Length: 144
Image (cartoon, rainbow, N blue to C red; front, side, top):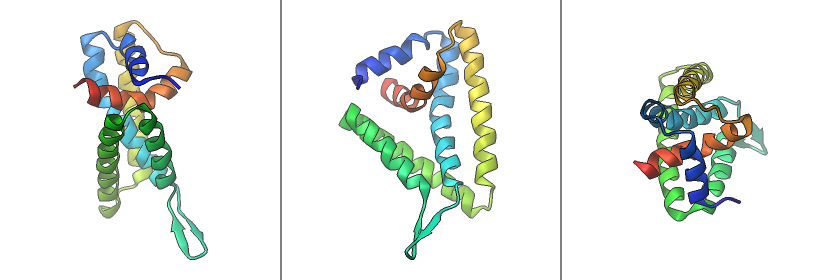
């Protein structure tokens, strides 16, 4: 697995332009939060009298990934994950359709990111895009 500095350097390569950086400072954490929302919206399972929410499996997997990068990254991303969960839970209490809200925001964030990449003149590969979904928020928190 790549080291934290490798991930951040690779992410930074396609985020040099001032406008693209500003776009990604908002949208990279936003994409992460909306992914939490999308997973949250998957109906839970009832197993032997227990309710199993898929979001906690997603969160556990993501936090394991972050723990392999560094303790600092794990703590930062645990904070963002808890904030994301609180935000999504608040939407749930307000009876907002979490799926529709998350999907709509996710599409807007990704559109903004593609505009940023167009300004930058660089378009990461699909494989990089998927990896960068987890690295983007780290870059935002770690570099700022």
